Every structure is written in C-alpha cells, then in structure tokens.
Amino acid sequence: MEIILKEDVVNLGYKNDIVTVKSGYGRNYLIPTGKAVIASPAAKKMLAEELIQRAHKLEKIKKDAEAVAESLKDVSLKIATKVSATGVIYGSVGNIQIAEELAKLGHNIDRKIIVVKDSVKEVGHYKAVVKLHKEVSVEIPFEVVAEEA
Image (cartoon, rainbow, N blue to C red):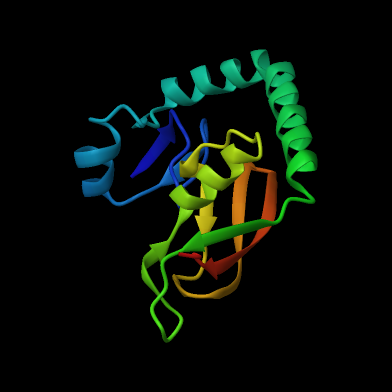
C-alpha cells in the first residue's frame, strides 16, 4: 500500500515522502497514529501543491540543518559509564546518553535522530550518526570509558 508520510519515521522515510508499506503496518500503526495518510490521487495532488509552496521553506530548513552539521563536525564525545573488571559495561550506551553529552556541550539534539549502528556494550571507540535532514547527516565519534569512583 502506498502512503504519504506526515512526519519523519525512522528506517522508513521523511515527511512528505510517498512510500510503500505492508497493509497491516499502514492501517494499524501509521495511519491511526497520524504519521501517514493513504496516497490517493487527490492526496498526491495536494502534496504536489504543498511542496511547490514550501520549496523555499524546505531550503531554509536544509540550510539550518547544514549549519548544525557544521557545528557538530568537530565534536568528539567521551562517555563515562560503570564498567566491570573485564571491561564490559553494565547495560549499554545508546542515543539517550549521546544526546545528554551533546546537551552538556550546548547542542540540543533530539535523541530520536541519533542512530548508533553497533550495540555499545564494551569500553572503546564507536561512531553515531545524527540524521538532521534527509540529505544532511553527521557522524560523531565517541569513546566509552570507565567511570572513576
């Protein structure tokens, strides 16, 4: 089934994208939660008109995302966490901890747009991707270290 996304959905698409999903996912989750509408011919025409009217606004949003990406380009994080004697983390480090560390540095980034590819369960060096816009993303290196008592 074809749907038009009304907001960004991780691993599916961005706002105003026309995507194909399975019927159950669309009818039982995306449409009832207001994240999407069915892509009927009338809805597609309305989307085209809306995109024409919002072209300059989208360009401004992209420029803002590029400015944020530029400010995050040289950021490197060090996350201290509780570690066992063997170097294994109690729990794991995810996008929430990365968002908190970025907030400490003055970058208020929504945790939902931060993607950590690997599961972080040991001390070491990792990378996270911040997806600011569908065409703008930034890779942030971070190091997980043992918390000092």
